[in-house]
Length: 64
Image 1 (tube, rainbow, N blue to C red):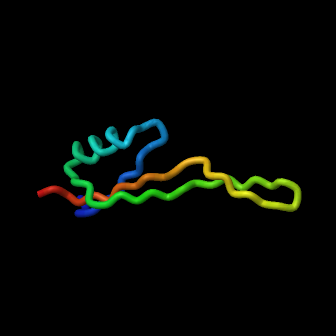
Image 2 (cartoon, rainbow, N blue to C red; image 1 turned 135 degrees about the horizontal axis):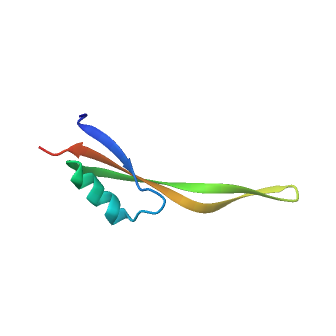
Image 3 (tube, helix red, strand yellow; image 1 turned 90 degrees about the vertical axis):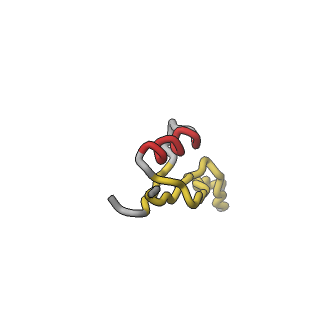
């Protein structure tokens, strides 16, 4: 097993469920990153970027 691993919160999963999954695999979360997800919408000659969601990723270390 590697000492560090990344865990992404799945589409139909809560943050708490993801944290429980991390703990069950023997890891401890050390960092959380969020990235917005945008959709490109064209209105006439103008391009607008609308937020449609977010991607949450936890970086975890192997607990000893």
